[in-house]
Length: 158
Image (tube, rainbow, N blue to C red; front, side, top):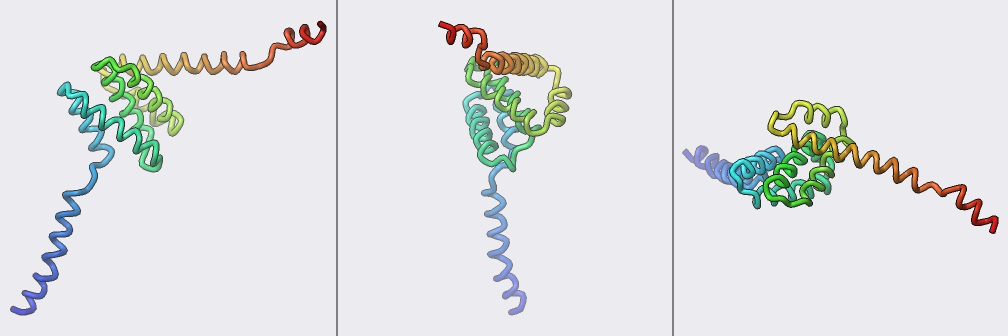
């Protein structure tokens, strides 16, 4: 009996600590994305916005925990938030996540956006359009940053 008593005395704190650790664990990235998605589906945008903002900060502060699929999912959550509450900064945040997803792993990002639900296709189309415009703007900016040789030559002749 005393042996059983000693074993139970040693086992009880271990069980309690395990239970406490299990209850206080932070939600995973996937759980956070799912929670934000659920909030958006029930038109509860404020907690969804908070989750997305905190998750984006977490992913940018700790890139090891980020992957292209997660960033792609986050971009669509931001697009849904922008569509629902008309906050234009959410479109910028969505594009930032979109761009980072492709920078991180273009094949995974492309696969995610290609296989997205029909309901999300307009949002993906908007992100693709923004990316196309941004790409052209970058090329135009690179071109216009070069000095104009004609105006330089003309100003030295006077």
